[in-house]
Image (cartoon, rainbow, N blue to C red; front, side, top):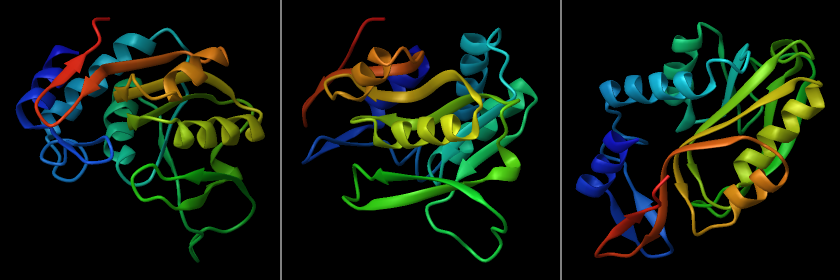
Length: 191
């Protein structure tokens, strides 16, 4: 997605540890118009996949899930990183290691919101090692739901997550794939 790549080149900053900072428009301050375009592109890619639910993990994926769900006219659902008092009943759970925070969360989704009748599109802002995606895929499988695929705003193509997911036979559509990056330049894979 050229528009997303242009924003990454203009405003993205590479930090030590292969961290790509895009917090000025994607995962802290949100450019709503860009999110709408991302939602439209995700819909274009998956419009024939029979999506009944869009699933993400809190917090950075929620806005993207909402933008995509709006296009599909289906609910957006997010996995919580902590069980709160307002989560009642049984849940699906999976362990997820955070790439940027270096901690492991047990993510949960209420069983009443994900059923075997669902066809789920997973969406997130970043794909690096794939831990969040693996956890969400696990939850979809626990529910007996079917997986339409994974939509990613930015994939770090030099990390193993995308390769592993695709190797599992999962459809992964990344809107921008970073082939390499350092403090001087960000190079995108031509798709």
